[in-house]
Amino acid sequence: MKSRVLLGLCIAIAAGAAFALSPDGLVPVQSRYLDHVYLRPDADLAAYRKVLIDSVHVEIRNDWLTRMNAYSWSASRSVGPEEGLRIARDTAFSLQGILAEAFRARGYEIVAAPEPGVLRVSPSVIDLYVNAPVRVSPWRTKTFTRDAGEATLLLEARDAMSGGLLGQVVHHGIAREMGGQLMLTDDVTNRFWFDALFRRWAESCVAELEAGKY
Image 1: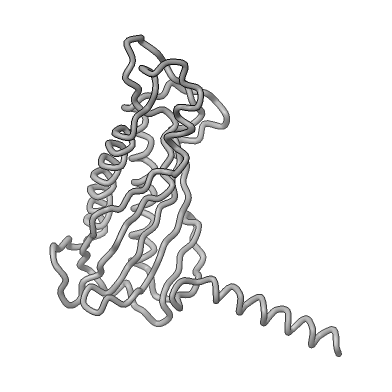
Image 2: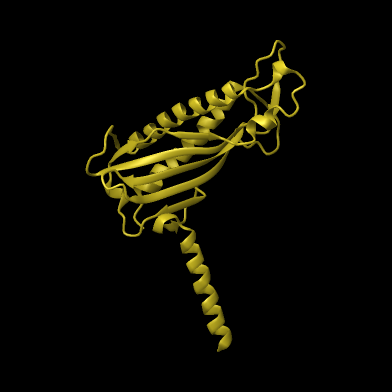
């Protein structure tokens, strides 16, 4: 009898801990393609057919610049902070368009200002790490990597008028995993594979929100 009581107590504690880990009272739901999806109980996200997309916030991983220059044998081969700014700017621009495209493909109307019946989504890219940034060099060089890089992708969904948090997605993605094979990497391939990662993530996010009634 004591064993069953103890087991029940452990289950209750575990369930309470899992719920406590959810952001702002949201509850976790299973997703086939995304790491973590949280929705507000009784919130009918599927009822929203208009969306306001905030500007994408991008953060480069803190140690990225240091690691990029750790083995630079020439100052002309080093990566400067301006390259990080360029990557962040290009990433934000690209993901903004990809998200809008994903919502339009599912029949959503993109609006420019809050109004009743509008879902407001705030996308972020944090810990962005690009393996082969552009290096200004007088020598012609080639870089080979196993993938283009990685990032943690976040999306918060709120009611545009009340600001109430309705859902959140957290997902860590790698741009082009090749099973350990090395590939030629440059700025063009970086953009291609990161865009492919962003497109899969955006489509999965929209699908989860569209079906999102907990």
